[in-house]
Image (cartoon, rainbow, N blue to C red; front, side, top):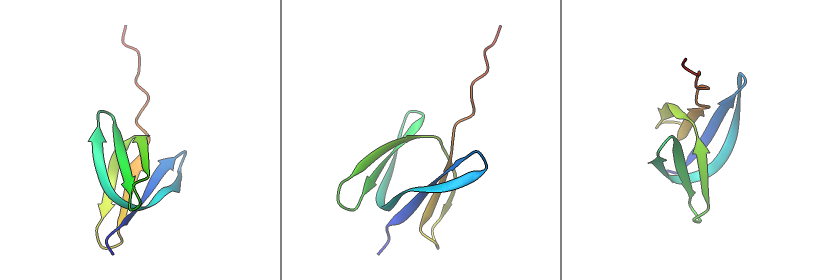
Length: 69
């Protein structure tokens, strides 16, 4: 099986947010995660690392945008 687990890093911690992911599709500043049974989750963030050997995708929260004067 080649499904992946997706982790999201927040506040120095990393939490698994979805398992059995078969598709990661970019959607603007987010990613649509699709599971083996068709479940979907839209997650804002950016890809930090994909480990094909361990079948993991690591996302981080997007940086807060600073206001420009």
